[in-house]
Length: 116
Image 1 (spheres, rainbow, N blue to C red):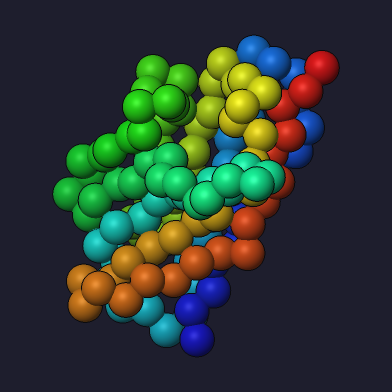
Image 2 (image 1 turned 90 degrees about the vertical axis):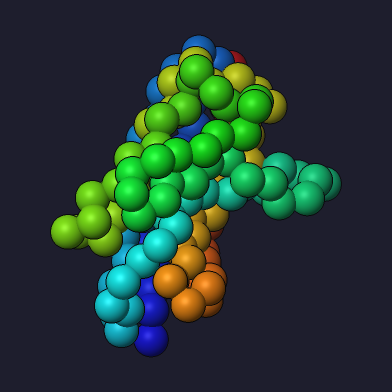
């Protein structure tokens, strides 16, 4: 059984910052991709950012320059530092990982609300 536990969501004013964390636990021996998707009300889930096992990263155009993804492989944890938050960043943020065999696992999601 593999579990992903997210933390760090909440309510923040426009222009503010939040840091999301996601820790993987359970029967998993290696991880290829770790990252984040988000789903806003009435919209489809979309990619935010991911990190490959070699440390390279990829971001959605809408968050480039504002969000930074990082990971600690020894702790099997991925982080998402979000700066310059905007109301359209409001969404449920889902952590995920993909094993080298291509199997995906998802967290339960953490709510981020950007509002004054």
